[in-house]
Length: 251
Image (cartoon, rainbow, N blue to C red):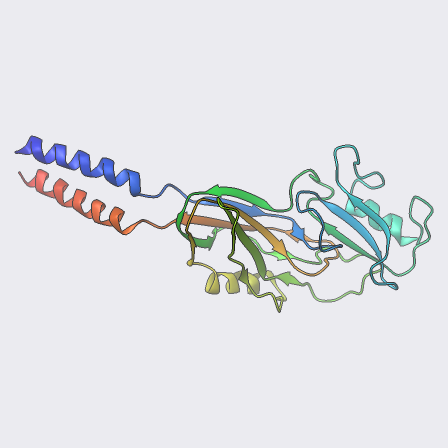
């Protein structure tokens, strides 16, 4: 009898392993989209110096490519120092300027702004990791920028491209307003984001990125965990396996 119970337990656990979900997918977002021209390629970092007096015009536009490294500056401070006298290194005289950047411009410009993962069909729960920070839109106030309170992003975009090329949107956060401190954003996220359920009816490539209005320059990061939710059958099998184990140990 014990042998039968043991074999039954092994079978239940093997079947349960097939339906029990694997660990969480962790997503670290450290670059913002929609800085500068809204249709920029989100696989590349870009850095623009806008003419603040003439909307839609720029003194300088750069988009990363392997053959086009950032030619003039190796750090934010170098750029700020160059702009401080009103003349770019290429002898362009600048007036009322504004810096717009996206991606890790001075650190790792080859890194894509968005992050993408292949996910199986199923149900997932979203939460911030315990060590997540928030994203500040104007961490670095440039010499020619209007000083003001820090502006913290409270919006993240997610969308899925399914196997049949249809898409699904799963954005979260507050598009219409920002927060004045990191703690406010984290409190908002944890109240309204943690536990968000995402249903993927088919296998998909899932894209994650921070998005907002044209940012001056920005810093910080958001770290998310997307965890598969157990199927009801998996829960039943787990309960059944525990019951068999209890009965086996009682024999």
